[in-house]
Length: 308
Image: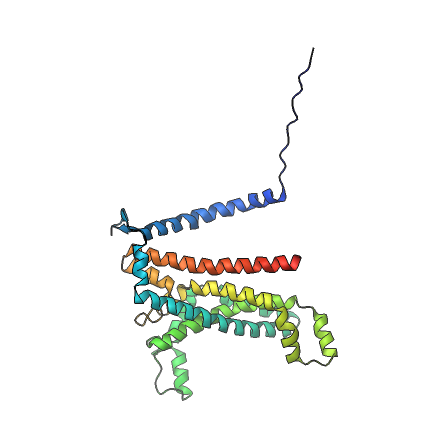
């Protein structure tokens, strides 16, 4: 009797790449459900003329008409300009403040170092809308103590209208955004300083280098990757700022502190102009995604150069 031989069945073996995708799969599914579907709906809303009904039924396809309306609107350009102004100025202040916090935390010894790093997390972890409400009370010209402080120090005769004058309101938003973000910047830069070899500082001190020289020649150059990461992460956060603006000024006075996120929110929910609001949200998403993509590319290049 002749036995028939069958080809051996190849057993499928999972590689590290397969395991990585399996572990990422739940997160990818959740992101597609909670982020992908709303984003797809927003894009559809921006491309159609919508009936102003509760059903939000699609009336007719109009392409990029809503985007053209935005580009022709001075309100949009004003919101975009303040968004960029807020991002540049706030991130610069956050970087300086975070660097000072990191230097102070690194200089501490013993249990004080651990306590200082825990305290840096608390202000950043506070919900932005609550933080904005607290600052709004402090800046109030009638009951806030900051206005009374300026009068007591002889800076002004009467409490300033911090949130009632456009220029003051703009810089109050910038300062609050910077104050909240500098604590996260401090955490990032403290971690970067912790990876700086102490032997370099010791050798430089033996050679007669002072603290200021060691900072400029050793600490700052070695902190460059952490600084780049901090700037990009904080820039993404500032570009999509909404809670602080909404809670502190509501985009006013007038539209002096309107940012892209609050502009889209106001058009969608206040004016019920769903198409224009959706177009503003899509533009905000594209701007933030572009900065985020650049951040990922920079960090990936840095990791590749480090491992090479």
